[in-house]
Amino acid sequence: MTSGRAVLTRTAMSEDHDAILDVVREAFTNPQRDASEEIDIVVSTWKLGAAFSELELVAVVGDVVVGHVMAGRGDLGGREAVAVAPLAVAPSHQDVGIGTALMTKLLRRADDARLPLVALLGHPGYYGRFGFEPSGPLGITYRPVGEDNPHFQVCRLSAYDPTYRGDFTYCWEAPG
Ligand SMILES: CC(C)(COP(=O)(O)OP(=O)(O)OC[C@H]1O[C@@H](n2cnc3c(N)ncnc32)[C@H](O)[C@@H]1OP(=O)(O)O)[C@@H](O)C(=O)NCCC(=O)NCCS
Image 1: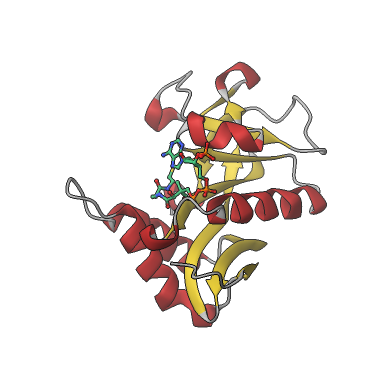
Image 2: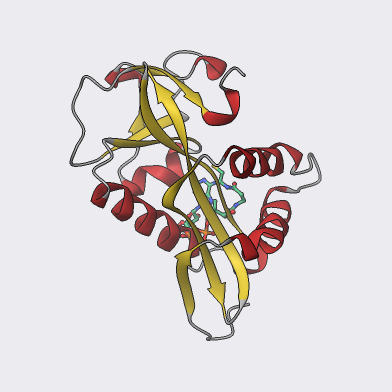
């Protein structure tokens, strides 16, 4: 519980890594599955040094990490683009606006960095509120989920232009 204590969001540091993995594990584990896929994504992005500067954030209550989001470098039709994976809030702290605070700050920072867009794979019902839209009509595809899958979404930023199109590949999927 937040117990009335303020929730702060800040840039993640390497000292946060263990606590971040705990949050990701708690958020994504359920009776049907464990969180190994999301843990692998986070660890691979760290190992590749592919988290975009200033676009890995934690939410903290006191000194306890309760939420995490990261945007990693990827490839969009031969040009660099970033994608969020994953966004996680500890179950004991969900539904009090922490995911919203993390995503809002990440998008503001991405816009400040003059990135054209942020991509992600997720629930349209959650991410639409931040300005994400299905990527298919913009000519942006993510082959593993098939063309025109509404779960692959982009949020267009101020520096967007329609030449940003093609297949997207996450950093951890890149060959080599
Ligand atoms: C999804 C998640 C990041 C949201 O973070 P949060 O801090 O709980 O969310 P917020 O408090 O900012 O927003 C709550 C709102 O999101 C909605 N919401 C939460 N999860 C949702 C989902 N999977 N689909 C649609 N809406 C969702 C809530 O119903 C609530 O709606 P309301 O504002 O209309 O009442 C968090 O619940 C989580 O970590 N879940 C498990 C991991 C996960 O699914 N991550 C996202 C992968 S796509």
